[in-house]
Image: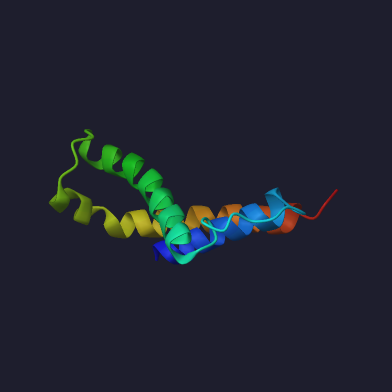
Length: 92
């Protein structure tokens, strides 16, 4: 799931935000895209974790409680961002 998410973020950046430039070889590799996806899901997990437990003291069992909402929220937010760039990205 992290690779898929990272792949979509790298695509958005290279296709819409940085057109006519060469890509970063490390970022466009399998580990690079997976790392971008992990970073994205971490950025989504922290607010969900805090809103449920009202603290940022991470415990493995609590993280497992919010994994599914994190994946769903992360993919939905990413879908909204992708749709926004797909619809408004080519307009000049």
